Image (cartoon, rainbow, N blue to C red; front, side):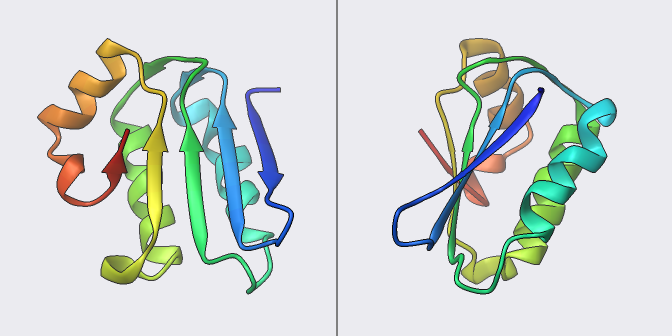
Length: 101
């Protein structure tokens, strides 16, 4: 499955792992991953360790997650990016909107 979710033991952190291509074909699964979480989630981790490709629709999906999570007050980190994915995020100035590690 290209999108997997995992909740922390305390239920406050939702980790969304994207496998393979992060593009429009994963749109609905990515959206379902965070929209069906309950109000106790206050931190999101996007794990891109197995992501091989990221396009502009994926950037848009990350922005939609940011809006859902509270905009400027959202706690979202994007982790384990390979060099190509990190470069795309950097070119798009996403390090100003997300914590990228």
